[in-house]
Amino acid sequence: MPLLPAFEGEIGTGTGTAIQAITHWNYASICRGPDSLYQRLLHEVGDPNAYITFYGLRKHGLLNEKIVTELVYVHSKLLIADDRIVIIGSANINDRSLLGNRDSEMCLIVEDVDFEKTLMNGKPYEAGHFACSLRRTLFREHLGLLDQGNQSIDIRDPVCESFYKEVWIKTAALNTSIYDKVFHCIPSDEVHGFAELKEYLSKPNLAVSDPETAMSLLSGVQGHLVLMPFFFLCNENLTPGAGTKESLMPVCLWT
Image (cartoon, rainbow, N blue to C red; front, top):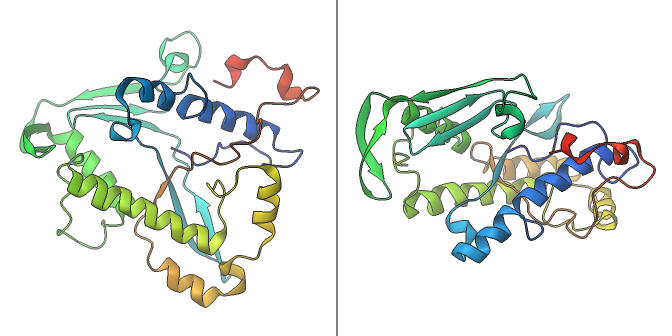
């Protein structure tokens, strides 16, 4: 999912009210508060990470001979279920966009009729040809395997531990660590409050202070996959403050 909402303004400043409000509701849905997905799963299944995890996409490059990075914001929504069914389109996968009486965006459902033998959680499985080929292509892109022709990494089984833990999570964690060292990216799990944010961003990063070392570290980035930070600004109230125009808007506009 996008690491930050595509709203104007800068977090931690007077212009960041809207982007902070969306960030609040994102975290309230995912991991903060008793009604969040993670907290509810915690009571039901113990470890939510055994069932669901969250990631973002980031890339880097040279702009006017300076090393820069930016998050990858994909507006289209996609759900691939069991390598058999695909929901894809611009509509959000929620009541607001799918009930038909609010947003006017649309999406489509693709149910495979052609199947191929593969593996799922280490066991023989019949996957839909379109669904599994789309998922594998996206995995190769996110993991940096599209141009390498690297067949040593088996991406057929998305949930077996040898792939999920040793490839997917490991790659996301490595990329996140490198980007944090080189750019002091936000959002970041190292920043829990606005004071920390100001201090974090004020420190010169390697991309500025030591470009040669920065490029050496960035050579270790594989694809675009990074971890979604759960503790970014966790000590702050990100809802719109009294007196702001955003505070006058009903909650349904943000959710």
